[in-house]
Length: 458
Image 1 (cartoon, helix red, strand yellow):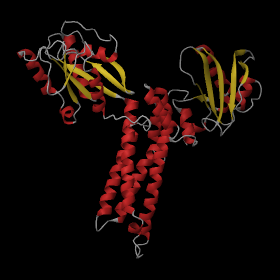
Image 2 (cartoon, one colour):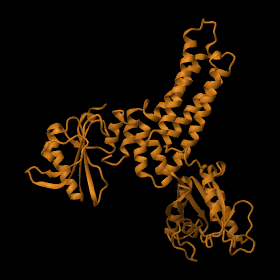
Image 3 (cartoon, helix red, strand yellow):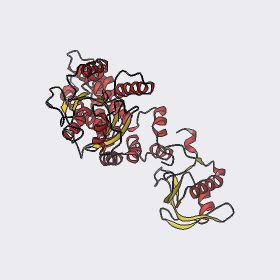
Image 4 (cartoon, one colour):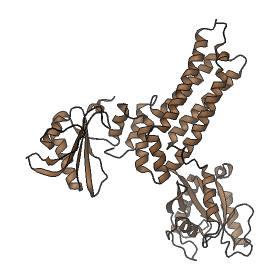
């Protein structure tokens, strides 16, 4: 632990603003001085006591509930004091100031973002994946994301990772034994079916990686940009997907000058839809800035809907504009199959058939259900309602590296002249990569980055 982890800490643990109840939370070693100063009486462990919270002169700041959680039976594993008062910001700030005043002799300070959960991790109350799930549960934007974060917080994801690590440890022991006793006549690896066990572990890692990718989608969602020429129906499509009049729709070309965005849910997956300025040559300085921003959004998008107007297909000027846009689209979109051609105004077109994309009508809603399913396909989503746990990009990357090391280990094991020291090293690296997920092999700077993204008081 760093020296700062020895300091007692305090913070307002509820969201800013007014509410019925607000909580001030303190954690550290031996918080008796705080209990005496604010409660003026001993507190029974883990039992709520209704009393006045005293200020420095003996007057009452407020009346509420005080609960003392002695170590190690607390959220952080340290002594914890929670003061539940009325949820006005002034009251909570007075309580916080009084705690700091009363605790100045023991070095009490305001907690940094995520420091309570960081201490829970450092005191082995949570592993790193569970600690991250606390933040993910708070920030969940869909019911599916909240349920998946809850599974991760309960330890489902960590159980999967620890099970894989345990199986890898057994396999590493076999390989190390063969390295330590090369003169033995018994082929330990063949007798123990080491190659078969390695293959099974590799397949299990691939399955967990797939579920982690789904969890990452639930947490982070997918960013979809609607792009195309002016007046093809981009804003109408955004409004139709969102079910609200978010963007202004007029027959005047160039109505949208800047991006308009909205997050929608499709089967529990957050989809961040961005309507952009129509792409064309323009002499209007403001419109040119909007168009430049449109291309920036396209470059950063997870998927792009290239919208076409079926009622104008065949017009020379319109077709030339389509060709210019298509020629400028990032090659990465085309190579990774993240571009979807959408042909709008099917209700008004004489011949609405199109052979290289999706036909719909943003006005009537025709084809929208198909578009929603297609967006999930572009994101790589497949429904696993009871098996997905919330995951982060770093989890996916660690699992991907684990799989890469295991594949290299398989290649070594398959060779007639297998270099067992290289096989053992690949297994060690795979084992370490898994350990990064739960925090067994996580650098301190990464821990600081993770917990700094939490809210203060959590």
